Image 1 (spheres, rainbow, N blue to C red):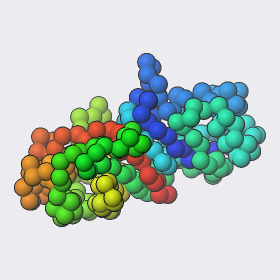
Image 2 (image 1 turned 60 degrees about the horizontal axis):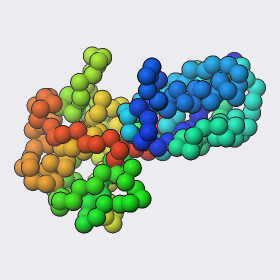
Image 3 (image 1 turned 180 degrees about the horizontal axis):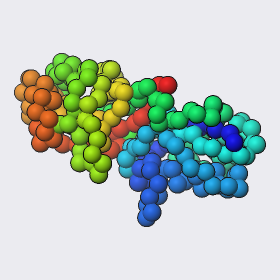
Length: 244
C-alpha cells in the first residue's frame, strides 16, 4: 500500500468548500472522483485542512493510500487531464506510510487580499474584496501586533458544530500595501472556524475608523465574538502555504 501526497491549487469560487458534501459540489469530491476514474478504485483524501465555500488555495496538501502502481509524474498528468480547469495538481509524490497531511502540518499561511482604490478589478475580482473607502493601513498594522503569539482567539471564532479549544499561536501577521491592494498574511499553528476572515473584518473596521486604537487588544481579551468585526467575504481568502 502506497501513501501518495498531492499538492493542490484551486479557485474555490464555484465550490461549497473543500470538504465532501452530500448535496453540493466540493473540491474533495471532485478530486476523489478523478482518482477513482484513473486508478479504478476509491480513495479517501486526508487534507491539511478545510477551506470554506468560495475560499481558494495556492497550496493545499492531501494524501491518500492506494495500491495503484502508477508513477507520481504520470498520476499528476492523468489527474490534470480530467480535473476541471479551476483545480490543478501542482505536485505528486510518494511519502512514508505514517505521513498525515493534517497532523504533521506545523503551520499554515493564509492571505486575505483587499483591493482599495477608486475602482474594482476586472481581473482579480474572484480573488479579492473591493473596498472603496480609505483605510488607515498604519493603524491596522499597529493593532494587528496584539494578536501575535499564543492567545485565546475565541472572539474571532465563528459558531462551530464541534467544541474545541480556542487557543492558537499566530506566528506572523503582516499587513502591506502593494499598488491598489492591501495584503494581510496570517501564519499560525492552526486556525479556528472563520478565524482569518473575522480578523480581517475587525482590521477593516479599525482601518475605517469604526473602532478606535486599542480595539484589537480589547477584542482579544473579551473572548466574545460580538466584540469583533463582521466576517469578511470568503473570496478574499487564500491558503498560500503549509509547512511540515
